[in-house]
Amino acid sequence: MLGRIPDYHIHTTFSCDSETAMVTACDMASLRGLKEIGFADHADFEPLDECCGYFRPDDYLAEIRRCMIAYGDLLTIRAGVEIGEGHIYKQEAADLLRRPFDFVLASLHWVGGRPAFDARYFADQTLDGGLRAYFEEMAKLAANADYDVLAHFDLVRRAVYQVYGLSTVDYTPYEEVIRHTLKTVVKRGKGLEINTSSCWKGMGDPNPTQQVLQWYREVGGEILVFGSDAHRFDAIGLDFDVALDMVRLAGFTRLAKFQRRHVSWIDI
Image (cartoon, rainbow, N blue to C red; front, side, top):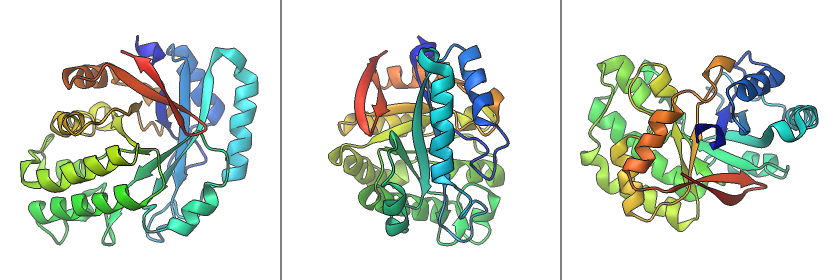
């Protein structure tokens, strides 16, 4: 079963924070029995981000085509991209998305000039204030960016873990804004990613939490993909068994896959 589930969040040397060659990632995915993968290298336009301006989309897509030819029917390879703050950098994202991507991940890495992915995020704000600001900004991203799937919905949990040592958070105080965001995702025909990186990094369960996943189901959510967020080749496909247990517990019976930004389904 796990081999049939695509890993739709793999980074390569086309991201500034990965040293994994694309062909190496393909080799590892094939070795681990995956039948389909999706590359999703960073396209960042926030000047504070170390990856800002690093992405070379035409070279990236050309390398994906070379891997497609090399692997043939042995491995289905999808061309994805992870766009940071697409609701703010709408023109830059639109220019990028004139190219033939199979899927687009939307990420919220920066909120108010603070990196939501590490301890610096809470340098001058409380846990409650930081979480509320993050989820309010996520609502804007979900409503206004061009994307197919929201990546690591509660990425801020990485910063929470680093500062407060918490591997899980009760989001009940933020339920209203989170449910509003999830309803927006459903209304727009978009989806959520189950991102396993927090799990294989030892920081708790995948993102989002079971609580958020259940709310997504309750508001009519259907589209789900899995992503390891692998920046190194040996993380590809890790902890997908944990993610599968989560989605089944929430009542989901299928996962999504993409081609040219159109959805098809995998029964689980």
